[in-house]
Image (cartoon, rainbow, N blue to C red; front, top):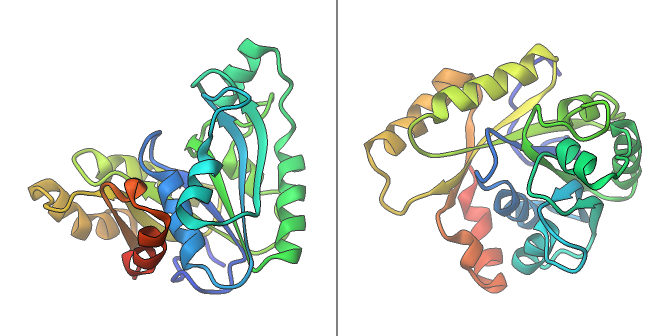
Length: 231
């Protein structure tokens, strides 16, 4: 697949790497929605979860709560709400190398139809002691994969999404497209215009629009509605 190629969801890609233009843009809710939309057996991986204690619910708990999915694989859990490399350093934890995560994800891809991998923050956030990130992890995968970039709806998103797509393209990594992580029921002028401008700015399509408040839906409501949020 050529750099920047943008096939529609539901294609050959076995692994979907979900990254964001920033933290708090809706990656977890998007991951849960993609899990609902996928067919066949689905597994979800979170290589590094930060900002939660040992017994506190993390992102994968939200994925389970919304989608009902049970094949959930969390890597390292860190207490401080920081980048994994920073949180691990403060806690004195040695992070596994991204190649180890890639091997585990490839193994899951051999036994599942779809594997969703939710990153931490944006694409360049470090996941191991050497500072390797989700893009570096992808470079070690042997199974077919593609990136989904979750973006904000409002002002600033054209620049943030463009930079994220550019970072992926510069590494020759395939991009399936963008998802708006939280779109208000009544978008303002910038949010409306961005829906049209994002594909023109980034060169990849907007594949989905997650409505604001989707994370508050019941599992039944979420599962029923999620497929309709994607093109």
